[in-house]
Length: 228
Picture 1 (tube, rainbow, N blue to C red):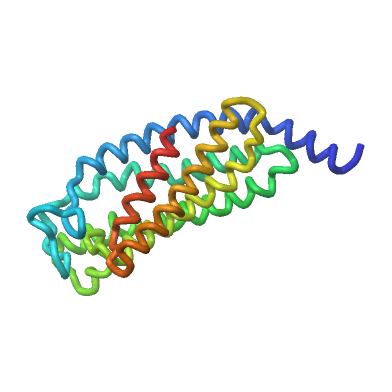
Picture 2: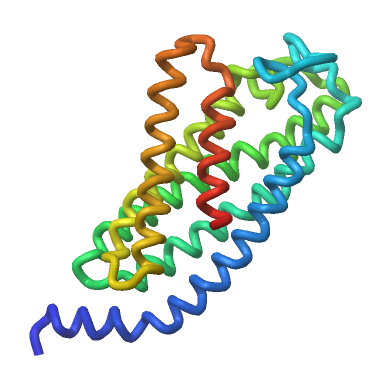
């Protein structure tokens, strides 16, 4: 038996457990993402281009009245990132031998996305909330989620861009053997294409005034892909 045949046999042997783990991680991810989406939509924008009334302005520290409501959506959103890594790992084990390079690249981008998003949200929940409530506001403006061009928005945008890139490579795993695989393939690829297209269009329209417009769009695209 050649080394390639042994490799293919080993990969196929892992498929049943990978499918079960992938299925349940997808189910939980869809439910948690839906919950995050529902709570986020119910949270009104307090600053930036989408704020319509009683907007918070620089230095974005007079926000104690918005605790804990404005941060509730981050708890399920923080939970979905490790589940996304589990799903991508399951896809990697599911992938056929000649597709495993793409699935490994997708898994790598998923790990980057999960790390960036998790760090970003964890800082908001464990540093920003207690610091603002205790009046320790020095240097917090740049990190605040209310700053439309701050570090929080930048890291969140980067994380979800990495997630979209993970979609692209994961889509290459599904070779279109049946309608389910074809649907998953084009769902992942379309998510990436919409993300890149939105970034280009919004950057051209708003330039340095982009603020959190693209962040909202990329989260919406990624979360819809995760839910489906």
